Every structure is written in structure tokens, then in C-alpha cells.
Length: 169
Image (tube, rainbow, N blue to C red; front, side, top):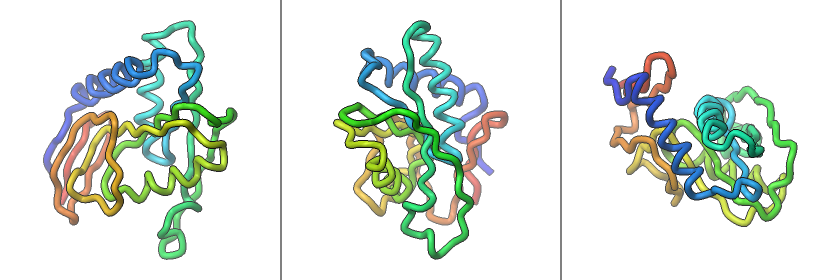
């Protein structure tokens, strides 16, 4: 097991990601943040908390999206459905999708399909803690990246906010 980010580095990286999103979306009335279930919400919860420190009195539209039934492998594997919690329209809004690890791009493709159930956004951006570059199956690239790493297909990236981020395999 190889440590990619320590607990302290993860905390600093989350702060930096929140700052970058805020710098590009200072007018939050036209921006929504959406964490992807299940693991992306741990990153998105922390990013939203950091953004609240930057803009104490402004409302942040924050939702959580389950993509289980939009996945292209839903018939091949058993997936546990999670809760979607988006109580606002994304019609004409700037959407920032937040996930923990970007690998093949399949999760993000499914998330973009699922988003259309909540309206047609004017723009969709992607924020990830870890980008496993060179492994894409879809032409999807993140706009905000905590750390880019090179991995083999048989390796796994484990994100644990108490222990940091490890590469296994």
C-alpha cells in the first residue's frame, strides 16, 4: 500500500479545491454543487463546508445525486441504490459535479445522464480529489483536480479521510 495523500494533505487539498471553485463561481446564485453517491459525497460535504467559511452569508445550492440506475453496468452487477437529494432546479445553472476518484469516466457519464432529470444546465464542470489519468474509456476530463496519479488497471485508490489516500495493488 502506497500513501498518495496524508490526512493533512487531503484537508489542504479540499481547501484548495473549494477555493478554486469559489474563484470561478463567485456569484453562487447561478451555481449548484452536486456530490455523487456514494463516495463523492464525502468529498463534496467537505468542499461545501470550506466554501461556507469563504462566504458565510450566501446560500449554497448543494445536492447529492445517485447514479445507480444510469450506470451502463447496472444489469451486470448488483448495486445498492443511494438517495438522491436535489431539491432545486438545475435549469440554466452552472453545475459542479464532485466525486472522489475519476478513473474510466463511466460514473461521470452516468451522472450527466441523471442530471437531465433535474433540468438542462448551462454548463457542467467536474471536481475530483484524485484523477487516475490515462485510464479513460470516455473523453471526460476534470476541471478541478486535487492530485493526478498514474495507475495500473489492477490497482485501487482508497480514499479515507482519517488515514488519507492510498494506492493498493
